[in-house]
Image 1 (cartoon, rainbow, N blue to C red):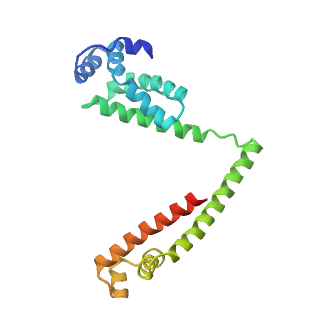
Image 2 (image 1 turned 180 degrees about the vertical axis):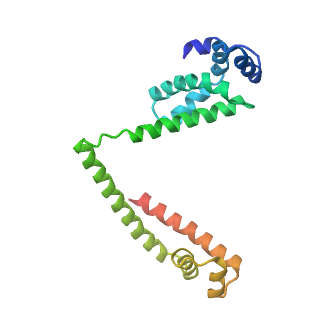
Image 3 (image 1 turned 90 degrees about the vertical axis):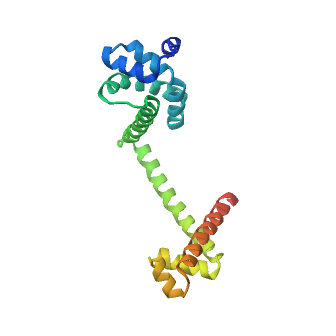
Length: 191
């Protein structure tokens, strides 16, 4: 990566370097352009991949992709386009890692079964906590939330059933959701 940083000292605008690179195919022009944003690209890669070495590898992989992709696409804002290219590259790296699973490994199978069971237990625990939090709501909030989420009634239907204004129904549901969220977060932080 150092070879790119050393030549990034030109004041030539990005769009001109893009045009020149597309015209001549000179990799040095692309290296100069890419060098301007390597810190940004590294930060994006580190954000997604979480490991400095993987992020460094991704920075080089993105440069390799850039060589051909910049020739194919019209780019108005190079920095924005490069950011999107980098993010997509990292997401593809993460997806490909998830696909690489050796199903013949019995230990791995056992651990995935445990993870699945842990997820089921966690969901059940969350539902129990949610039921407790529902009890902490005011009677009006509890009723509107149950009608909206459990009985799948619309705001208009709830307003008719409860003799409440539509705006009041909306307010009750929003306040109930906020109260439920706060209650659930409090339960998780207490654990």
